[in-house]
Length: 135
Image (cartoon, rainbow, N blue to C red; front, side):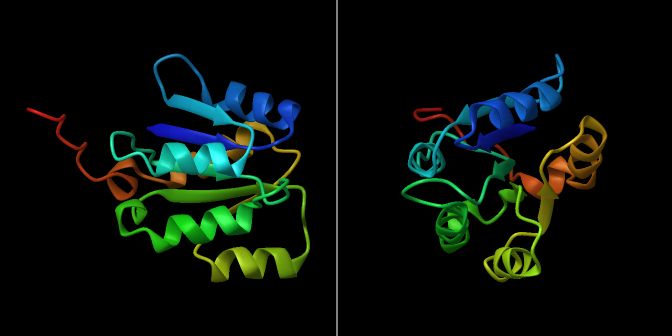
C-alpha cells in the first residue's frame, strides 16, 4: 500500500514511518504539515491508499486536511487514520463527523499500528492505479 504520514512532530513522524516501512511492504511518504500533504494529495499523478494524519498541527490542522480530503471525490477511497495525542471524545467525534473511520492515540505501538493497517484492505482502499499519461 502507499502510505502518507502527516505529522509536525519529527519524532512521531519518524516512529510511525519506521513501524510501517518494513522492506517490501509499503511505500511511505512522510511530510511535516498539512499544506505539504495537500500538495501531494491534490497531485493527480500521485495516489495514497492510507493517510495517517495528526490533528494538532500549525497553520492548517488535521481536521482541515481531513475535510479537504473528504470533499474531493478523487480521494474518496483514501483511508484516513487519525493519529493524535488527543484522547477526548470531542476530538474523536469531530474526526468521525468529518469522515475518519480510524483513530489511533499516541504514543502508538508497532502492534497497534500494524493491526490497524491489517483492517484496511488494499482492495477497499485503492482503485486501480491511474494510467500513466500517454499510455
